[in-house]
Length: 24
Image (cartoon, rainbow, N blue to C red; front, side, top):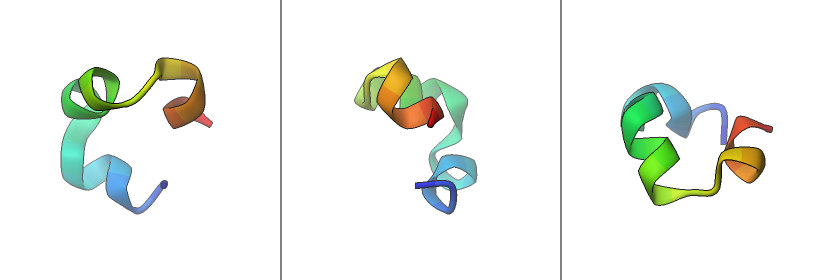
Protein backbone atom coordinates (compact mmCIF):
# COMPACT_ATOMS: atom_id res chain seq x y z
CA UNK A 1 0.00 0.00 0.00
CA UNK A 2 3.05 2.25 0.28
CA UNK A 3 2.78 2.91 -3.44
CA UNK A 4 -0.78 4.18 -3.11
CA UNK A 5 -0.07 6.32 -0.06
CA UNK A 6 1.62 9.21 -1.93
CA UNK A 7 -1.02 9.09 -4.65
CA UNK A 8 -4.01 9.38 -2.34
CA UNK A 9 -2.33 11.52 0.25
CA UNK A 10 -2.57 11.24 4.02
CA UNK A 11 -5.98 12.95 4.16
CA UNK A 12 -7.60 10.63 1.60
CA UNK A 13 -5.93 7.52 3.03
CA UNK A 14 -7.08 8.29 6.55
CA UNK A 15 -10.65 8.89 5.43
CA UNK A 16 -10.78 5.85 3.14
CA UNK A 17 -8.94 3.28 5.26
CA UNK A 18 -8.50 2.64 8.98
CA UNK A 19 -5.47 4.40 10.41
CA UNK A 20 -3.79 1.28 11.84
CA UNK A 21 -4.18 -0.81 8.69
CA UNK A 22 -3.08 1.93 6.31
CA UNK A 23 -0.17 3.36 8.34
CA UNK A 24 1.30 -0.13 8.30
